[in-house]
View 1 (spheres, rainbow, N blue to C red):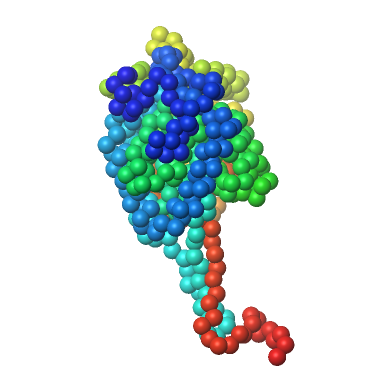
View 2: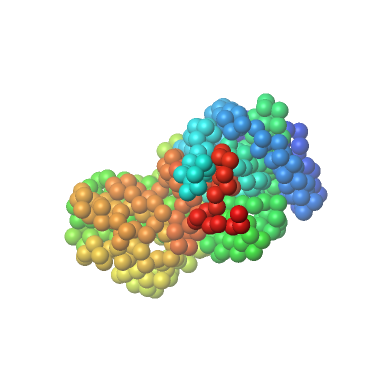
Length: 505
């Protein structure tokens, strides 16, 4: 453990407020202790932001924005390119820190850092493609076009389950768009944020800038400072539906913008003609990966009644082969849940599922002999889509239901209030296209013959309904970080008015 901390310049006690190279702010706030969910033992601690320190950090990013926005976008992209290279140099220790602090297995921790690198590469290309449109004016001798300008300092609030990648989705895009970033990570994983800030500081120093990336570790109070801050025109929030609703209302009240990435209750429809080998592998990773603590984790299986039993048997056999233990150990496929509260929530959900007619096929137990927050991944066969199935439980619980017709499957699929990710397994092009049609999946992500879990770099990530409706990462998600301006230029010596209006002589 100590070797990982040393490689990332982490000390027993670390400042959690920083605005750039040599700009760590010390506070007298009570330290936030980061605990290893595998053992329950403390790793190190972070001094969180006070209100005074927070305002200092935001004032710095606001001042830096006035300079940063004037830098040509390709030049801003060069800084992000170097950020990606700096992350490459710290790929393994940073990935291992994520595993140590959050509990996902080593391969997933390193994969998360690789995702940061990939989004930096994407953003570098984007820095030369912040396109506007040219339109024909209805006035003779006029030209009309739109352009995009930097928006301002933005607030980014991230969740514990992806303590690094979600920051990069926002920070890399915001930076090439000309914005500066104030980051409040989850207080469950503050060390990962401090380590990333050290890397960002190195890159900022090499480019002779400061205040492009700032860090304000803290609890709910710091989050409320961000959502209420008129200096932050955009707040990107990843977290629960309940908190997201409050964030949305608070920011809207001051006419700010939000990007919301909230809950997911993701389903896979498995058709009668599905490749069950392919489906089993996809479901196993989607439901068990990150111990079911992804917003894109597979939580519901809607299987055709003709293959439901065979699929269930295949999954049960696969589940029994999942190695559970130390996420940094070779061969481990599932680590611990993040908190003791998550363990309790899982047990409560399973009890409710049984009371609603559910039958546990495999799993369901806690594993205190392995560690305080270890559980068995669980499959529950349900008689229908009961109230507990419609809830998102952030744990490795997979509900299996049967369907007869595709119309019945889509009804079950779309009845839940969340709308993030979805998938169907079928060899029928008609069935696949029906799933992707306007009458099909109502989610922001809809896949065919691939699982629900994972964000594809280049595609816009986000969902509908109670997922929040925001989009991050790929496609034209960059537009959320900029302001649009329409321009009309008169190159003639006349002054015609729109719609043929005559006003005076």
